[in-house]
Structures are given as C-alpha cells and as structure tokens.
Length: 103
Image (cartoon, rainbow, N blue to C red):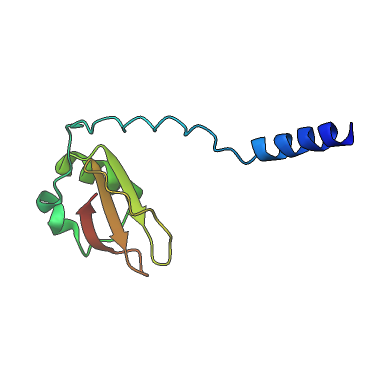
C-alpha cells in the first residue's frame, strides 16, 4: 500500500514538471494611420525669442497646422514619443520661446 501511495505521489510531482502549452502569440499592433493635420514648424520660427503667453498656443497651433500643443519648460520631464500632429514649444528660464518643433 505504501508503494502505491508513494508511486502516486511521485507521479503527481512529475506531472507538475511537464511543460505547459505555449500561450497564443500576441496579435499584431494596429496599422499606423495618417492622422492628417500634421504639424509644420517651419512657418512659425519667427516666434522664437518672443515671450510666451498662453494666448500664443492657439495662434501657433493654427499657423503650424498642429492639432495638439505641448509647452516644455526648463527642468520639466516630458515623454519622447513622436506625434506628428503635436507642436512642442520649448521655453527658456525667462519664459521666452527658445525652440519650436513638431513631434
């Protein structure tokens, strides 16, 4: 009887070591779609050196064709993801526009 119990216990332990079936592969990501309204910062470079005002956001967005605007101040963290429809307004320590770029 002990042999049967011991054999059963060993069989159960070995069953735990059996490889499990591999999971289904992840589906592919959706294709990138053209969003339209891509930003073009070349048209607004004359604003570099100007003091930043919140009212400028909409003006710069309209003139660059951007759908989104992100203001980046010195020392702030920001994501590095690229968004062709986004305008980045970089400010210096005095609140002056130092760089205008898309992405």
